[in-house]
Length: 377
Image (cartoon, rainbow, N blue to C red):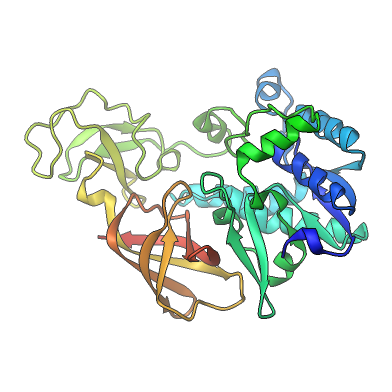
C-alpha cells in the first residue's frame, strides 16, 4: 500500500519530536496530502522533582516536534493520553512485573494508545489515515492488509506492531518503513529539520533514560530472598524477584563467587545468569555460562494471541522472534486450545522469557503472536 499513488487525503501524523516521525510528515506533505501533526503526551509523573525532569524529555520532545511542524508547514496539536496510558498500559506493566514476568510495554502502548486512543482521536479530527515513524510497511493483498517488516533490517519494528488488527492496519501508513535509517537522516538534513541529528530515543517511554531498577523501586514491593544455583547452594540475596529478568547478567551482586569444575560447561570464571524465578519460594536461580542448558529452550507456549489477519496461520513451517533484538528463528507452529500457541524450534532459543512477546513471521510478513507463558528444553 504505497502512499505514492494514493488519492490526496487528510492524514494525522504522530509527531514524537524524533527524526523518523518528522520525515514521515515531510514525505506525506510532499505527496500533496493534508497533514496534521499530533504530539502524544503519554506519561505524567506523580511528582515533578528535579531528578524526574532530568530524565523525562517530554517537554523537550514537544518543543522539537513543534519546531519540525513549523519547518514542514503543518499544524500541530498537543494531546494528553496520560490517563489512558496509566489505565491501559502502565497498570498491566506493573501487574506483570509483580507476577514475576517481564512485559513489553512498547507492544502494549502501540496496541492500546498509538493505534487505539490516537487513531480514535485522529478519526474525530476527520482524518482518513494516520501515520507514524515506525520502520514497518503495510500492503494490501487479496482484500487483506498485511503487516510487513521495514526494509532496513537493523531498524525493523514490526515486532512491536504485531498486535495491530485489520481495521487498524487499513488506516495506517508507515512511510519510513520503505527507507533505510541513513536515508531518513539524509532527508532530514536536506530539508533543514532542526532534529536531523537527534539521537534515537532508547528505553521505555515512561521511564526515559533513568535507571530501570530505580524507577521500579517507586512502584513495586521489595521482598528480598535467596539467590541459589541449580544445585540449591546459596550464593547471596536478591532484592525482589520483580527486579530481575531471565538471561540477566549484570546487577546480581555475586560476581565474586566462582564455581570450580562445574559439570555443565561453566568454568571457574564464567559469568552468572538468571535462569529461573521461583515465585513460590521467592528464590532467584542462577547458572554459570551463557550456554548453560537451563538458558536454552526448544519449545515455548504463548497465550493472549493476536493475529493481524484475524485468524491463526494456516501453515506450520514459520519463523519467530521470542525477543526483539534477535534474528528470525525457524519454528514449527501449532495451535493449542483454547487460545494458545506452541512453537517448536530445531535450534535452542536463548533465555525465552515469560511476559515477552513471541512474534511469528512468514518471510517478510508479520502474522501476529502472543505473550510467552513458559518454555522448556
